[in-house]
Length: 247
Ligand SMILES: Nc1ncnc2c1ncn2[C@@H]1O[C@H](COP(=O)(O)OP(=O)(O)OP(=O)(O)O)[C@@H](O)[C@H]1O
Ligand SMILES: [Mg+2]
Image 1: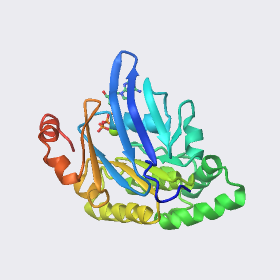
Image 2: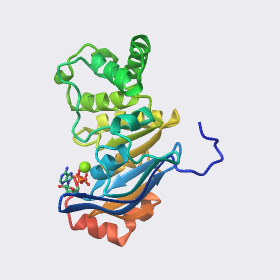
Image 3: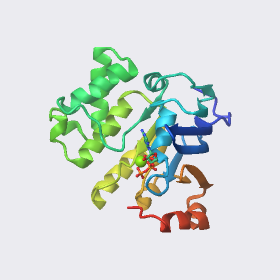
Image 4: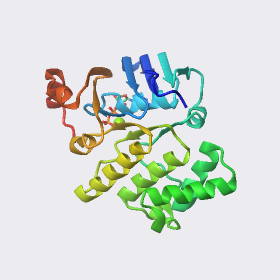
């Protein structure tokens, strides 16, 4: 672990550009999250939020710029290697192994993501299922889960890899108010346990119960970032939202 006195970001993107063929999606994006911090990312549809997660997590190489984890340059490291280094992400569309049970999904993540042996993975999976409220569903096929439980499972699979940083991509969408409260409680408990959290979310009232800093993206750029109230009151942020239709 890093000494608490260092002011080094836990995760950082420096001048990141990303193009998919002729389509440029990220423009000089600078982003960071400090150890133990919870940061929210907002912005209209198509702003490049999920693409930033892909760049951070190593889903694809960036076109230029750098990603650093606790000061270490991640250039050339695969998504699997970044996962082993403590960087976990959830996907906007949950991606469980549908033919496996809930338990098996989390067990596999502990085995392959954290490199645990059978016994440790079993103990870890049970612990994480308890923490994420999925224990009663452990033997249910993932395909049989409703949306909230699929999202919980997405979080559980990410947690099973033993992360120091978790990237959450719109895990609140489509949930009822009561389900949102449960989700917010879960994320707060993870942060209280020392996890660094980055959360992309359109549902602002849920996001603002967790994060202390907000980053607003639009058209592939960081528009502004800082105190959530200042960010939401920023004229360009207002314009970006009024010019689109966030959920
Ligand atoms: N693999 C890809 N190939 C080509 N274009 C892509 C790819 N991934 C994303 N894009 C494009 O990049 C832009 C940004 O997409 P991205 O998914 O990052 O936005 P977002 O901010 O996450 O939006 P949303 O709020 O709808 O999830 C969009 O125009 C999208 O079509
Ligand atoms: Mg997205």
